[in-house]
Structures are given as C-alpha cells and as structure tokens.
Image (cartoon, rainbow, N blue to C red; front, side):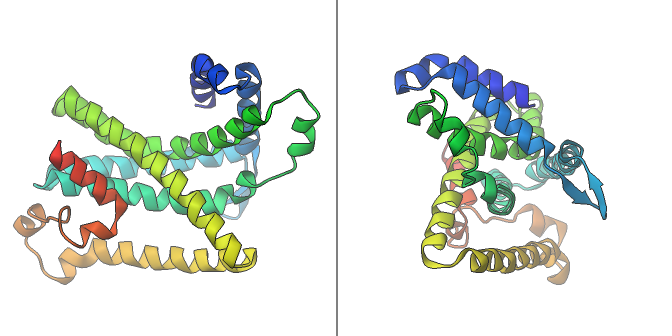
Length: 253
C-alpha cells in the first residue's frame, strides 16, 4: 500500500514544483518515513510482532467494520444518517489513532539534523511531514470506507459512489487538520504527560458511549421498524458530530 501512496505523490510532481518543492526528494522522504512506520514494533497478545503484520491485522478488523457500515447503510431508511454515522465513527477512530500512535512521528525532530544537512528545501521538508501524516491516516481510513463505496458503485449508482468518495476525502482532511489543531492547542495549555492522561480518559468515555449506543435499541425495546426509521442527521443531536454534517451534505445532494 505504501508504494501506491508514493506513486501518487510522484504523479503530482508538477504541483509540487509549483509550490517550490523537489518531487524526487519528497518521494524519497515519504517512502522512508512510511517504511519506518511499518517497521515499528508493536505488542499483540503479549507477544512481539512486526509492525507490518500487526498493521494487516488492524486492516482486516477495520474492513469488517466497513462491511458493517455498508450493511447499516442499506438497513436504515434515512441515508443521510447512515452515511453520517459512518463518517462520525471514522473521524473518532482516526482522531484518537493519530494522537496516540502518531504523536511521536508528528513532532519527532530526530530527522531534522539529517535532512537539514542535505540539499532539502523548507517547502519539501514541510510537505513531507504533512503528506506522511495524511498518508498514515488514509491507510487506516480506506478499509473502513471502501466497502460502502464498492456497495454504492455496484448496488446503487456511480454518481452516489463518486459523491461518497468526495465526502470520504473531506472526512480524512477534516480529521487530520482538526486533530492537529486540538492537539497543538492542548500542548500549549497542558503538560504533555497530562495530555496523554486526558486522551486516555476521553478514549474510555468514547468507548462507553459507543457501547451504549449499540445497546440502545435493546435497552429501549425498540422494534425493527423504529430502528429502520432512526433519524439523526438534521436534528440538534446531529450538529454535535462533525461526521453528521457531511451526512447532511449527502441529503442535500
């Protein structure tokens, strides 16, 4: 998958040149950063596993979650709510993942001494970091969002699939930019060790919230018809979740 993103970065070489960056150096830096990310060592079930193998396990899990999203889209009558819930869950997952897994890579300065000793411009250096974070987020968003895209393409219409792809791109960009803004704002006011503690509590809270949301139909004894007619997009509850804003765009389109 890394080769695909590096190739896409190379395909945009004319745009990078217009911005004043070196496309070849940008490709090499991005490829190296992605390789280092994949070679990082994680712990899975108490055993040391290669980062790339661990990542494929996560991709498989997220693909199963994406299949559940696709089924939910055809299960709910209100398509804006169905799509909005997909984007909401994706935003929450990517936001916490970026902070917990990419915090060191986002602000890791160990590569500065090496790169600054080479003929690399500031624009190339800045773009390489931005593309690295964006690529990392996209790699984990694709398994969640791709199943519904395929379902729309073959079971609905190519026009809907194209609109969904555009909203998916907006979801990733909004999540990355929003996460960076919130994280940097927290670092200005709160010490780093307290930031990690706050985020841990937030993760626990969001996990409990999603578990409760999953059990709401059983707790309230809602009928299957009521679940089919569940509407959240366009309500004041929906305005609390940015993912449902994009769901409202789906309804407008």
